Image (cartoon, rainbow, N blue to C red; front, side, top):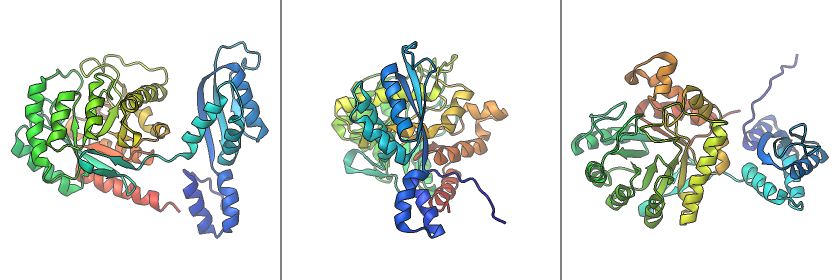
Length: 399
């Protein structure tokens, strides 16, 4: 008797692998692959006229497009549109939209980018370095030089102890060391530029001799400038260039890479009743603003990484939704970094202490990689490296 299975096909590549495994004719593969990948795409705030035209274009190729029920009578000012189509149908819709007025040609271009352009897999960094993400998940090790960080504050406050920890993380498989001289835990107070610089720069100078890629976690342009001069390759800005546009100038001037993170509020206020209408959509909107700041400064997308900011102005449900729907952030075509390690949302689930959250951190890490993350920012290097090696191998051998 035939056995029936419903397959979770994540990409056209996976579909092709299955066809090869089945022995399907190569010519047949080329016909069927675009028809075998189904997509559900949300478009926000369309006027009734272009929305109705879009729906007709979808219906003309056998696809579907859901609109507000009063769109057809123009009794709403705007409507969201939920497009449901195969890749083959999307291609035909995009081609038809190129010839349409009312902004539909732009929608067609945006759909083409969203669906068919790949996410950048090579990030350009300062000092001629590049970060290759094509070979598998990269683990970023957290090196806090602060006395008050939420998990390991006070452990690595001297250059000697910091370097010892960095060497250990590199041995365990960290591809990036992220150096931080100011705590960004909820309620944390700011430190002065000079104090943060005194903590960070001497360590970066020493790390430059041993570390593959050095990231500096700072929101201060002056600290970023000196750290890059000392040998850092990228800047991890929790405000995503939105707090101080000078940061984008520093990154551009040094040819550095940059992590653009989302935060609602500041570390001092971010956990005071954070609110979102659509958490993923709202975060995406802010990250797009950060990317635009970068591009306006002259920084190209191949220097950028985005981070949705787990725990930065988000409650338990917000954090879980970000992890579950992480793939939606790939719409920006920029690699995604996730930093969920040991964070308080894990403790809200099982009441664990910050030092006893390895299991929850690994669960978040595995979920992130399965849902599209390229970089994980973590405390527990050895365990995370082992976990993502297994996930990467499964992703390479799904059939």
